[in-house]
Each structure stands twice: as structure tokens, then as C-alpha cells.
Amino acid sequence: MTASPPSGDRTYTGDVEVGGPADVRELPGLTITKLAVSEMANNVYLLRSTATGEGLLIDAAAEPEALLALIGDAGVRTVVTTHGHWDHHRALPEVVAASGAVTVAGTADAADLPVPVQRTVEHGDTVTVGDQTLEVVHLRGHTPGSIALVWRGPGEGGVHVFTGDSLFPGGVGNTQQDPARFASLIDDVEERLFGALPDEAWVYPGHGSDTTIGAERPHLAEWRERGW
Image (cartoon, helix red, strand yellow):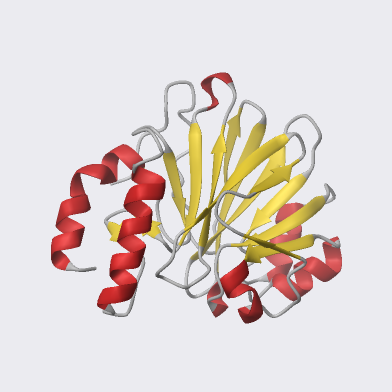
């Protein structure tokens, strides 16, 4: 089930399809544009500071022409890759070459990217887009260096978290039936997302529809019990 946007933001749904249009969300201080690309239906997010116009791209997954059209003439200074899996960075070389953006990724996954990572980040670091700040959350398990980004909007902006493949509607990311990896991921997700964010925090995953922390919180014990 698709989560319902907070009051005052009724046009954004987060439901996008490959080959279809992007969905745009205007928030105080930040515009979020979501686009689906590739046979894997990867979500790509373009964040733009309202005040400065500066852009940040999350996961240059595929279809570089579509991503460069999404970016347009406005400057994207940063591309963040949430983790090292191939389907999340296939368009990274072309996007970086065209934009000159700085590449950012979690330290433990940096070597898996197809271009040099100019800035590696750890849990608790921050990344900026114009005058807006995103908090880095390290979520170990789907990959060793998977990261999420949390934006805490001013005023009625709310809390928004970009989770890559670490949290989806209905569960955490795939850990290939490895009990140690699953325990690591669900522990991090429970402590660093569910333990730190309010129920109304909006979740933007690496594939598929959006959700909220509150919609998923009641199911944590069920996920632990089933082991995936």
C-alpha cells in the first residue's frame, strides 16, 4: 500500500514506472524528483535546494540519457551512491563526466563503483545540497558499505530518508539468507532508522513504492521472526 503524503502535499505519490514521468515533491527548502529506470526498476532521486538551485543525485542507476535530461541545465554537484551493487551505478561514469559532480559513497563499498569515489562517508557524516544538509546513516548487511541519507526539513518539511536497498515496504533488503548479514542489517535498521526517526518520516527506497517509518514499525518483530 502506498503511504499517504502529509497534509499540504497531496500531489506526490512516489509511484513511478520505468519509461514513465518523474514524480516531483516540493518541500520547504528542497525539491525531490523521483524517476524509475532500467529493467531492475531502480529509483533515482534528484534533490535540489530551493534557495541555491544546487542539485544532488542519489544512485545514477542506469539510462544516462534519461538522467542527464532529468538533471537538465541546473548544476548537480554531488552524486551519492547508496551501495556498491551494479544496478545502482551503471550510469555513474556518464553522469559524472557530463556534470563534473563529486562522487560520494560509503567507505566499505567505494571500491565496487565504476569510477573513483572522491569522498567516502561513514555513519554520522553529513552531505550538503546547497543550503540543505543530509545525515549519513550506515546500514550494514545488504552490502558492507550501504548508506541511507536523512533530511530533516525546516518547519513543516518533515523527515525524509533515502534508504537504498536497506529498507523497503515490507522488510529490509536482501541478505542472501545469510543469518549474520540479516542480523546486522535488521539491527542497524531498527536502531539507526526506527529508533531515531518519527513515525511520519517518509521512506524513499531503491526500488518500488515509498512508505513511512510508522507504516513499517509494527512489523519489525515479524521480520525478525521470518529471518528476511
